[in-house]
Every structure is written in structure tokens, then in C-alpha cells.
Amino acid sequence: MSALEVRDLTVEFPTRRGVLRALDGVSFDVEQGEILGLVGESGAGKSMTGAALMGLLEPPGRIVGGSIHLHGESVVGRAQEFRGRHFGMVFQDPLTSLNPLKTIGAQLIETIQWHFNLGAQQAELRARNALAEVGLDPDRLNAYPHEFSGGMRQRVVVALALSAEPAVLIADEPTTALDVSIQAQILDLLKALCRERNTAVILITHDMGVVAQTTDRVGVMYAGRLIEIGQTDQIINRPAHPYTQGLMASTPTLAGDVSTDLYQIAGSMPRLDAIPAGCAFNPRCTHVMPKCRSERPPMTGGRACWLEATHD
Image (tube, rainbow, N blue to C red; front, side, top):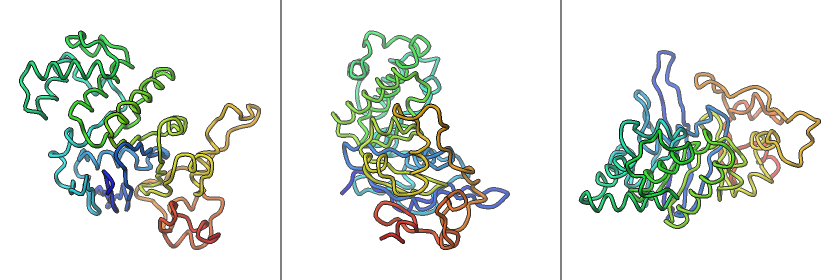
């Protein structure tokens, strides 16, 4: 049994224009100690998936279908029981993830005491160990967030997210606000800590370089749907779905010809109130067939594409 099992997860937002479906039948598993990347353009549904798992959907958004199981136990409707203790989260901007009016130590100790029945002294010792584990000086417990650099603040956020020893860590664009060298340090830190703790990780990103460096498997999302999933090497070097092929072709490489423009996928992600019938990618696909415009392809062999089915 996988640590996390998501089946046909569907999220909707009722609006004046009608019901908008932000996630449409998303299914995947994550094993203990595995890092699964979720990639795609803005609006693909990556962060919405993380928010749904954490129970952080803003009303009127709600889960209307599907299931989420952690070690076989249903999570839907019980987010408050699972948040923190079973699901941890690292957000994109570390500065807005921390309370500027409280010291780092106060925030760590409060989190630890919320989830564990520990006295102040025991909680402080655990907080000091948490800082040391992410490479920070434990004696800086009394410092405030503004006294740390961006990379140091993100290390604090990682310590907070892992302080309750969650089974699953969701990292939503955890390095976007950081420079490249610090980004590599944070990714290495996440990998090392999660391997050591055997924590399942969902890494949400738009950066294929981060995916190649960090993940074991990759799920590609488009218009609220998971359209391809597989081992990282396969997704990067042998993508099967035309959208994934376009993502990879538009990613710069050191071996690329600087005299030519990068490949660009025509068009843009559809609005939630204008997702086309059939395959949602069909208006932008260079391999589109009549069937693509009328029938939604099922996930078969790790991809949802009628073109692949035709070649099988």
C-alpha cells in the first residue's frame, strides 16, 4: 500500500458564471521516501492539488468527488486532524510563511507543543534540534524572521513543516523566491531530510531543472487534469504526451543552440469556464485528431492521449 493514495480527486468552485472545475479526476500514489514532482503551466492545477490535500481550499471551493487516503485512512473532510501532524507544507515565500512579530523559537515551540504533549523545556530542546537539522545555529531561537536571509528563512520553514514529523510533505514552489545557489542548497536539504525520515514528498514546481535534480517520478498536469506520469528520466528524456513534449522542448539546456529561439507551445492554458471537450489540450496540439475534440482520453500506460493509443 502506498503512503498516499489519491483517486479521482475533483474540486469545484460555484460562481455566478457557473461551476468551475479546478481539478478533474486527478489520481496518483506516493510511496514513503519517494519524491513526486507535479509540473505544468500556471493554472494547470498543481497548487490546487496541494491545497486540496491540505484542506486549504478557500470557500466556496470544495472537494466534490474522489478520495484521499493516507496509509489507508480517509482524509477528506478531516483535514484539521491530519494537517501538520500527518501533512506538512512548505510554501513559496518564506517571509510570508512566518509571523514577523514572533521569534523563530516561539513559532517552532508553539508548533511542536500543538502536536506533541511536551513541556516548554522539552519543546525548546526539540526546536533547537530542528534548527540544527536544517543547518542553522540553534542559539538563534530568539531571532526574528527579518534577521535571517531568504535562504535561512526557508530553512526555518522546512524545520517548521517537519517538526511534527509528517508522513507527507507538500513543497509548493519552495525555491522560486531564492537565487540559484541557495535554491540548490534548499533542494539538497529537502532531499536529505526526507530520505532520512522516509517522508513522502510532493514537489510542486514549473522548473524542469528542479524536477530533474530532485524527483523520483513526475506527474504532468494540464487544465486540472493529470495527463502523464512516470519516472523522472522517462518524462524528461522520452515524454509521450504532446504537451509534455512541448514543455521539454521549451526548456533551455546548456547544449542548446543560442542562435535559435526556444520552442513555444502555441496558445495558452484554457480558462476554467472554457475547457474544451475531449482532450483539454486539443486546441494547442499539433497532432490533434477528430477523436481528440470529442472524447476525453483515459490514463493508459502513464499518459492520457489518443495519439499514443493509436500507435499501440
